[in-house]
Length: 260
Image 1 (cartoon, rainbow, N blue to C red):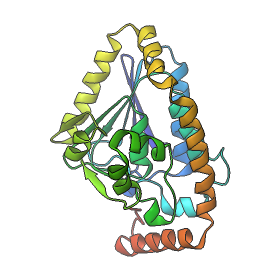
Image 2 (cartoon, rainbow, N blue to C red):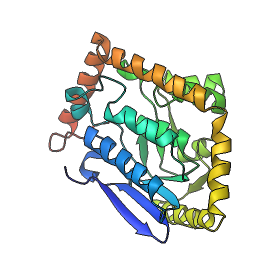
Image 3 (cartoon, rainbow, N blue to C red):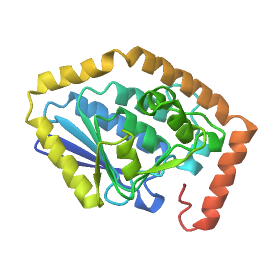
């Protein structure tokens, strides 16, 4: 397996960067597995205090790699993407997302579980699950309405509308806005340093207190979403929508087959 996630360690900060620019950092099953393994290892590593997750200065992630997704769809709750979700929600150490450019599908829902989310002006958040005949995932059906209210959440989850970086900060999906990717990445590093300067055991315990009351409901919601997601994938309308999008993508860029 090629390493499509770069690791950089610097004085207690682990930065994980999606490294698949020719596919706009689209996530395949190998990347889900690798990211889950890296996060688990970081949680057990006493030399890691804070984790930064990014796709670099140009694009966070365009979501699932459609070709890989259709060839190797999730079939049970232990599938790589669903395993990653469990790892993320049980993470003990702070997770910062530096989001430059597009963050589609799971690229958006993942942000709901990060402690801080930094975005750029050209960031585009979008959750086109219904457009593809699927359903929300990663607890989005629970967390987005609580964060945004039902009407705004519906615009994202049902219509598949997008948000730019400024709108994401205004509605609380992100914390800080930056003009470009370099500023965003530097700010994430600075924020990580601030967290490292705090008493670490107190930080982790306080972080868990913020999450513990909603954890049972979140776990149950993610399980329900994932079971329905598996069923939706088998429906004719989902298969038709996904294959149509894949074909359009290949026609648009036949040299890479980059997903949307």
